[in-house]
Image (tube, rainbow, N blue to C red; front, side, top):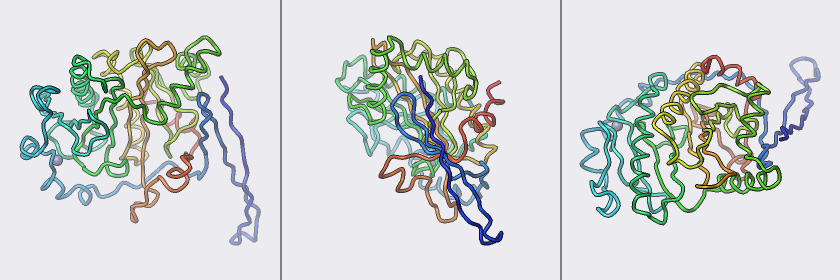
Amino acid sequence: MQFEAHQKETVMLNPMKNMQKRVVPSEIRLDPLTGRTARICHFMKLSWPKPDFKQIVGGSEATCPFCPERIMKITPCFPRDIIPEGRLTSDDLVLFPNLAPYDSLSAVATLGSRHFVPIAEITAQWIAKGFGLAMDFFKQLNALKHPESVYHLINWNYMPASGSSLIHPHLQVFATSSLPNLMREETAAAQTYFNKHKSNYWDDLVTEESAADKRYLGKIGRTTWLSAFAPMGVAGDILAIVDRANVTLDLTADDLRDLATGVVCALKAYDRMGIYNFNLNFFPGAEQDAATRFRMLLSPRTFFNQALGTPDVGALRNLYNETLCMAFPEEINALLKPEFE
Ligand SMILES: [Zn+2]
């Protein structure tokens, strides 16, 4: 397995220091599986001022469709042949069809009745409960042998910079036979790796990264936590790999709790940096496929300019799909690791 990085240098002259020469380093990294490139550049101290949450959140509960006084009146229901109860519930968590579906079996699961949950108050128990409700949905679809019940995906956009249009915490929960781009590329690349090396890429990654201990964060139950070598997020990505699990339905209640526990560890460290938005996605493999493993990716999100609402995704990422991370993943790892110990 190769962890390939190419160092670059930019030379500039500083007029405020008598045209003194300044050399700014940057790096292009190749993802060891797909060869996808990620730029480590635009270096800054990973510290963002926190906004006035009262201003962001204040008043938004008055029209929130997911707040308890509205949710059961205005959210749609599944047809009886899909979900006989119409919606699935678990205490105050509710799962219902997504009004803007990504695919034919597309749902939203609210994470309870509380309108705003600050990042520091997110608990593992709360996340695990949300994952558990999504699993109930996936199990029902699977029992129906629905043709779209192939890949069972959870996406979480937490707070506006992540792409969320609502403050009220909720998961995007969907099943599809059509793999999203990156999952398709990784699945194909993992198969190529398997054919070449006669071993599972993800298992090998866990072995190599655990031994090298540069990007290793820890192990919780059978889940290994790593800082991604070629991250997509501006403040690094956290990768969780569940040993011996391939598909989402392979996850046990213990796995869901362990995944949730690791997320909370990472969020504690990111909260200290001032990060208060993130994306989280499930990356399941295929059933009976020795080349795949279940992964979960957590990627912090921020604004490049809070006052202007400038997103951290510009032309480079949007049209070239080229990513940038504003610190070396190994340095970010050092900031996160104490939370996993
Ligand atoms: Zn709400």
